Structures are given as C-alpha cells and as structure tokens.
Length: 321
Image 1: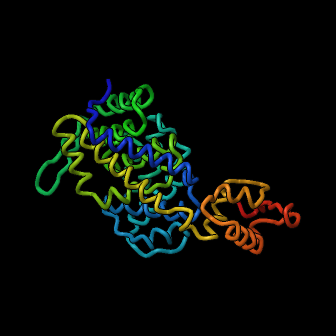
Image 2: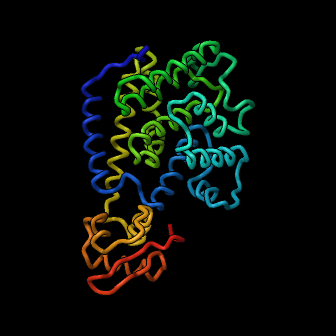
Image 3: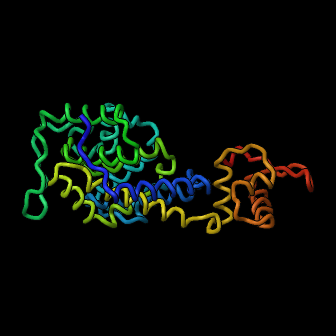
C-alpha cells in the first residue's frame, strides 16, 4: 500500500527548482566534490546529525576524531561520532532497498550505545516534547510488517526518488522501529537513497540545514502526524534539499583554490591528459591559471610532465590518487 501524501504547488515548485540545480551541479562537475570538500561536508554532516540527538562534541572535535587524534569528552559522545564516521565512510556498502542492510546500518551506527543494536524494538514507545506526549508509535508487534511494507514501497513504488526518499524518512520516523537511533537513521537512509540516483548527495550535508531548522523539522513531522499524510514533511525536506544544492553551487570553480582543482582532477582518475583536458573540467579558468596549476602539481609530484611545448602532456602519479 502506497503511503499517503498529496502533491502540492510547493512540492512542484521545489522539485522544479531542485531539478534545475542538479543540472547545474552536473554541468559544473560538482556531482563528486573535491576530497577536501567531501571531508569538510562529512564532518558537518556527522556533527549536525548527532548534535540533534544531544551530542556535545564540537566540529573541531569531530574533525580531530576523523584524523585519529585524541579527544577529551564524554565517552558516549566520542563513540557516537566514531560510529557515525565509519557508517558514512561505508555508505555505498549499504543497499537502500534492503531491510537486512538497514538493520546492519543501525547496528554499526549504535554499536556500544544500546543493548541490542540492529534489532527492532520489543516494547511500546512514545515521544515526549516538554511535558506532552507528542507521538505514540505503532505497537512493537507491527514494526517488522510495517517496515517490510515500507521497503516494498521503495522497491516497487513508481514515485520519483526525491519524493520517495522524503516519504520513507517520514514513515520511518512515524513507525519509530528502534528504541534509540531513529532520527539519525532516518536522515542517513534518505541520504543513501538520494545518493544512489544523484552522487552529489553522498556528501551534501543535508543534516547541517536540518539542524539549523530543527524546530521546523519537528513541526513538519508533527503536522504530518496530525493529518495522517507525509505532505508537510515532504515540503519541508524538499526545501532543505533545494537550499543545500544552492549552497553547494556557491562553491564554484572561481572559489576553488589551485590545490582544490588539482585534488578534484586527480580524483577523476585521468591517467594522461593535456592542459586542454584540464580546462575542459574547469571551464571558468584561464589558460594561464591552468598552466600555473599544472606547474604546481608537477612541483608537488602530484603529476608528471611529458614532452615539451605544444606536445606537452601530463600523467597522474599513482601515489597521489
């Protein structure tokens, strides 16, 4: 059974806007960001998602953990970050349409934090906001069947992925299949679903914007609960996705440093290339800037120069990939 929602003018507006921005992302070769930007975005993603769950570590501390440096802080918070970094690092190893893979992700994300990670809850739960009971989740006996139906929708539903990922996120939060870790799993799985169709979402920090609009996030969940449809939540999440893409597009070729360009180009795994090939990737730079980049890459032993003058070509040093 298809989860209930309606297509509103706001949803159509954001789908159109997102589609245009995804085209611009592809045209600017930003669908797979430079290693440096990917690292920065992963840190932001993990920090924001966990801070919503009460984690007290700072961005700098999350960065330090990623670099295997010692961090002083609550052991639970440190373990949460370590688990999340591992899961986001191995994002592509999970099957977004598999219930089994979903449970494996929860096990990795919550290892050492709950008694039985990767297992659906065996008790009733409710969500309390302040002094009020905001949401009573379905009985635990229904959870396996509800989640099975939700994964069937992912596999067989003909909705576009932008809609489907939002519906899954909301319905999963409504079912509340775990004792703990539901919020971070909802955000993680939407990222996974989107990234399979649009690689840019692998490291696009949606969680940063969700955290910045946390009150609106919970209001959208509550509004959807009240009407029994995910429509308000879809509208909210599409606006977040649209804004995240807009922020990425501000990171244009003009703002990239020479090292960012070189790192990104090497990441494309071009074994041998010319200056013209380099400029085909970075269309907004001059030939002089391209030459300076390539000279720097040669000096840093990232690439090797072959030939002279108009026959000059370059080869990526395998050790730099």
